[in-house]
Image (cartoon, rainbow, N blue to C red):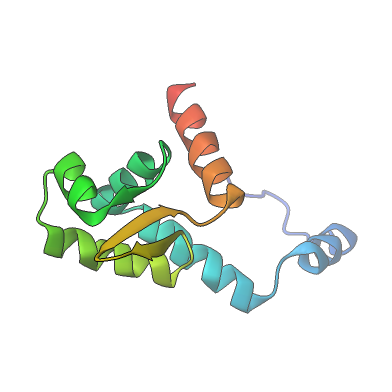
Length: 114
């Protein structure tokens, strides 16, 4: 186990680190994003959307799930601004919300393959 043998707190370093941490609200929002992406079904949806937009029917086929199940997962991802949608007639298309999400997915995939 990694424990300090001398109980001391490096006050300057601790203060510096505390100052650099995001606000608690931002930490909670970040945790929600990671929690959403920790679900294999939602992660597979996000990975599918790396290739471009897809409608719910296409995502359901890619993920081997019902459209209803995919819609439920997309609702969660949309709430967290991980995906966005646009309607064309009766069809709703989904894409990743922004480049930050794309970078996050690419970096985690690179980390796994490393």
